Image (cartoon, rainbow, N blue to C red; front, side, top):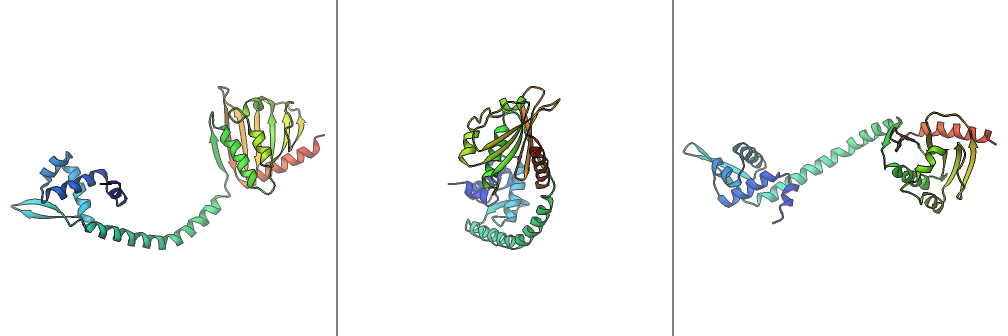
Length: 245
């Protein structure tokens, strides 16, 4: 017998055990049921209470003792129908609730969302850059390419540039600290500045990613998901790009 079907009806593992044991035993006291199922009496009482509320179990008293008995298994069909009707009613009400929640969600979407990436997760940022840019009409992103970060950035995703080119994604890079090479569909300018903490910044549609080294020398990152932040960073980058020879 496939017991997983009972789980879909709301049964717990213990209530399934109690129900099936009761069907096999017929009218039974809690003491006997606890012994047969190897569950304590409190658990058996809780399980019987739920089964009674669902209409699958009933009880009667005899000589001041309670005896529980399983109803006809056909009652399981009744339970399924009852839950189906309830779900249909919930579905009707949910349409209005979803609209209300969508309105709240869309307003909340204007607030920046920060996503953090630990050691070994930087590849996820690079994958997202490709995924987002590929869907964007501009198909372009911008980077402040720091020499101290650049040599580690593509560890675990050495084919990133090939994947970018294959997807037709353009990149504009302001290289900080010199170095870097052109791979195709890319432009590069150089900027010499003094800095205490190297950071690689990727500006792509709706997002801005900051990647740096922690105290252990491992790459970590944070992505700010917000179109306002992205537009500001993009504007600053483009203004600086135009001023660099």
